[in-house]
Image (tube, rainbow, N blue to C red; front, side, top):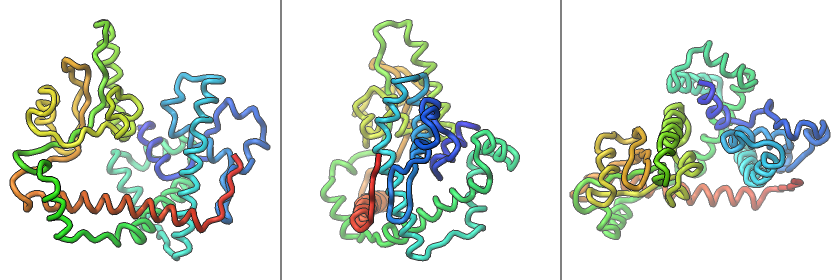
Length: 323
């Protein structure tokens, strides 16, 4: 349960109570120094460290001293960039007079409690364990809701995919839709060890990863962190496969899963696999795949529009980085 709440807390905010021990000795001046100015708002070093430690908790496990410090320094710039983008988007939302009312926050908390089977008491206990007061949790949820509102208003709600675009895509990608069902699979893969004695160790590691996924952690993120397959660069995404195009063990495991489900670890001659069914696509004509193509094109347009909007916010903003 604590692992689940860590994920939720990081998704919605920058925590303010988790400073790395290796930096704490540097003193209050360092903890309070400004690392970036974004228009009329600042980002402090302590805020930056909070996010790095929460997001990189698994990467930092077992590291001490110089190794830990080096790993944290590697993350400083990319994480700071993400924080700057978040502040710019929230500023734009407020400039547009977008607001979040208490009932929306209550609804979001109810959804989280239902999704992760939490009671009010267990939620309070988990927040307390993370050092986060309920009012701070609500404030950060409000920021997350506000971000979603402005992104939808500016980008997502302005995307229109016409039937002509769908038909053109279908025509330009004949191999993607011909024949029988195609399954889009993501995997986390561990190569077959040279020493058979290591197989049990690998199985334990894989089972732990499956448990973390069941607790709410992102499959793609874990694939990027742990998988030994080249697909790790794409969050483990193997794309769409049809019968006969992948290892038999993968195809057999995929057949037993529904969309969104994750397999237990299983072995093939290549190594140990964990797979997730991202999508199932029927063959046999455009009418059966029209909605899927529309969703794919909408997502592609959204990603392009979102990048363009973020770039525009940065271009017109005053940003000073002091890291």
